Length: 78
Image (cartoon, rainbow, N blue to C red; front, top):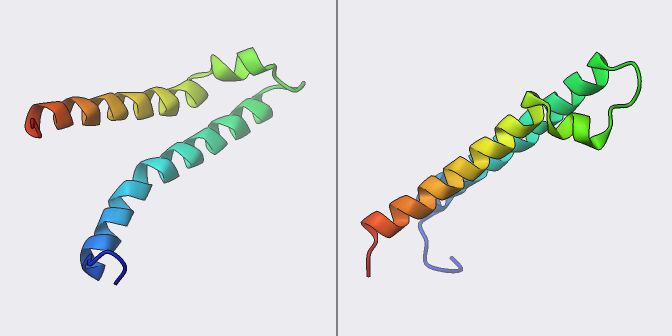
């Protein structure tokens, strides 16, 4: 063991930590695919960013990030 962490704790911590990243990448990929299929021409960058399928996962990630920061400040005061 490199840092004296139990294998079970490392596995579940990694699983929990990678879940938001996997969701965001898969949601962004799905949103890009929908935008490309919906348009005959290649959409501009502004059209893709203003699409709900693109900005919703990014916005959700930032909300999750702010929530984690807020909860850390509330529950882990030093």
